[in-house]
Image: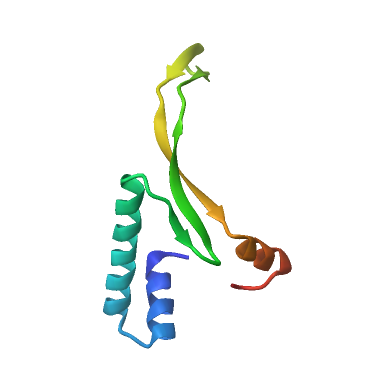
Length: 95
């Protein structure tokens, strides 16, 4: 699903204009990103949680250069689906 499709569905379900739905979606994205950038975990009950964690430095192999390389530590994002979402997907139902 694209952002445009999501905006259309939100507007239809909430009975608001697509412009308002797009603004709501944008504000939600901004809020989630801001919290993730500050190291917080964002929990959406019944859906899942977004968070960040530090990935340690590690060795990797670059096949193009045929060399081992040291990759520096970095912060990566994760999404952990809720048990309810996993159960619904396994049963073929929507949330």
